[in-house]
Length: 318
Image 1 (cartoon, rainbow, N blue to C red):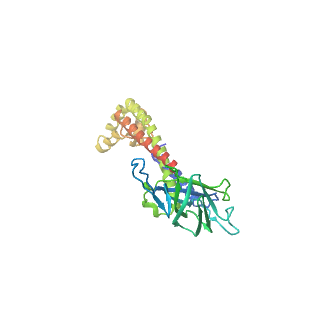
Image 2: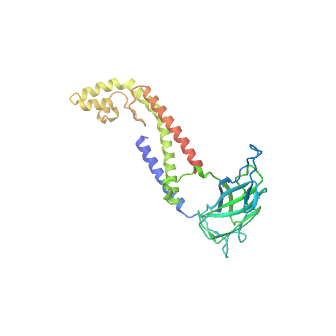
Image 3: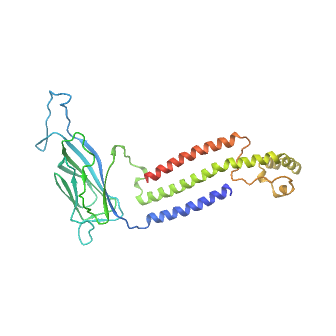
């Protein structure tokens, strides 16, 4: 099969796979509800100088309460599913009237401040737990608060909230995560709706995968094609050259063309030719010397390996 036909078939396959992937992305699917609890940042608000300067005494107070270690946690909760989480009414899909998050032992909440909420909600906080009351929590909506936490730990954990042992959401899960906002940057494509970005991402991955397959096949076929061409030239090129010079002695342009590219010679020439016909190879390159196919294979192997690594990383990120 020639490279042109190979590209055509891969293009057709890639287009069909892309269309099916886009349909799959936009076709509504029933899936479990998933809430992601992210600790966006942890900031220490008090400092301890006594270890380095024992004669220096520093006292901290927070709302009139003397405190030694105070930390500020920015915590974000997002509905990462395609379903709406309903908090009250006949169609609610939580088991109680609120979502409850308990603190791990050794931590105590002293205060909290609202940063952002994409939906109507109410928060009830005591020293060891957080309760969230709401009506509807839709896809990708975010709920974010700052919590002022007291602890005796010099190096507290980044995740301090946990859910009770029982499940709170019907056909749903609550996952706890953390990420560093200092390294996050706004993307140029951020204004594009998530579904369209996801569709473009999948289509790009499909064609990148197909390109890797094509490049791999091309790299493997190059030595085989060179061997066939080299073998034909060794056995037949001298006789072929004499025939071309004889038949096109009055047409120097065609003589040069057919001597340089035997595969373009008309069928009439091959009917006269007493040797083997020029081989039908998958890769047709100007490979007059051995170092040329070696260099081509080396370059395309490096590119192929690099693309494979990139493709695998994209799959893991996806």
